[in-house]
Image (cartoon, rainbow, N blue to C red; front, top):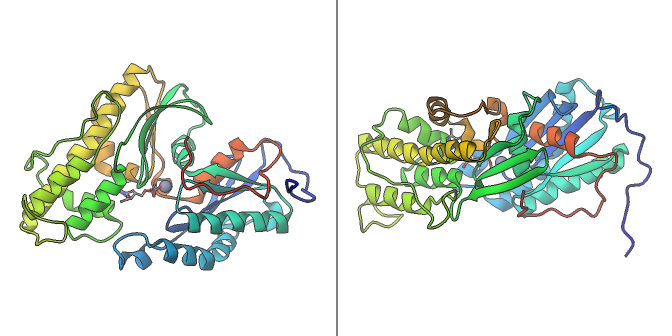
Length: 354
Ligand code: KG4
Ligand code: ZN
């Protein structure tokens, strides 16, 4: 079959000085759309969260997420344009998260982007959601210090990577089981806290004693840069339900002990990320550390990074760019776009290496 191409693409104002990119993010449970100028200036950043819908299921219900994206995508696009104060004719490029993520939600976002690209006669480009999380930390300061260390800590990913350039990475270490955000969510569920669990565990941990429970970070034999959180999660399960307890069993601890469990878990999980990041930054002689992903919102983590003797500056996403958002997609799309967009048969991918 012949490869389809975009019909009649309007000439783009590709001056790198005035390029308005509409970013669409629908990899999981946020329908997010943003307009970003020249990869940096955020004109709007609208996030239609579905958290309440999924709370009743204790986690993201993929089919429900897809339906929500269908309902929310176009109103969110309209709102992003309204807040940016731009007409659709003033948008030059559409960037969309093409993966990794849930297949249903990805299809809604990608097909939405393709439809808008056809209707508005402008190109679209698919970008990697996880790479965009790292870009979120670079957005506020575009004097990049490469090579640098990238630390991605989200609900689906946990890894350390060398950033040689925007778009050029060498993986250092990754998780062999759960992602750190996933571990926070599972511990939250064991502590009877609502979804999403990370911020709830952080809140509970504030009043707790982080040294009360001797939890340990997982070690991966022969892989000093890799992470493992499943053993830590089992430590927490035993602390809450007892050695023979199953996940649905009775919670055996008091409210005060719950706070201590949350604090002890958080200290070990975040401490592991912080220690490995600091060691990697030294070992690989990095010019900067860029941290991205939902867990980067955690204040205790930021404190730990600040307290450790980092060999180089550390960059964080601004608070509204930590969780899934369209601005990081639009920003990265600006850098990835090289005069031609992606073809209409671009497929979403549930897994993509960086
Ligand atoms: O990056 P993100 O929005 O989505 C993915 O790409 O996965 O990250 C969501 C994850 C969830 O697991 C959530 O519990 C976690 O980030 N998270 C946190 C905090 N805020 C969000 N984990 C720890 N502390 C927080 N304050
Ligand atoms: Zn994400």
